[in-house]
Image (tube, rainbow, N blue to C red; front, top):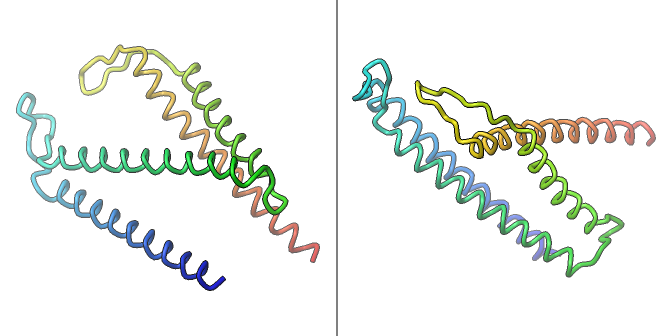
Length: 170
């Protein structure tokens, strides 16, 4: 028991440090972006700004996205593997059903938001974007984020009201 507690504290300490490092780098990147050459005019059209460190912000964003995708795939792999190893029900909780429901639910939301996504051309910074697949894919991600935010807000409200109801019974 003591070993498990110390292991959990170690994991918590490592995750806190990783969070602080990522936040620190993000703050430095955005401070550099806004404080160093932010008002540099765009070469082709002086009415637009072309900050010097735009590439730095984009590279940092790509690094974070790749890192998040790796962590997501690793977590998905561990969830599927642990459900197969540990069994269907753990401590009265239907672990396998919950895992399958979450994975299938996410795939259904992604598919539906892609199918219902708009393919209307968009004009951004004077340039027309007409590639129907990428317009639909971008719409899919935006709408999936909105759906997942609504689901998470609903889960928090349900959990809070359930907690209050259980406290009243005691």
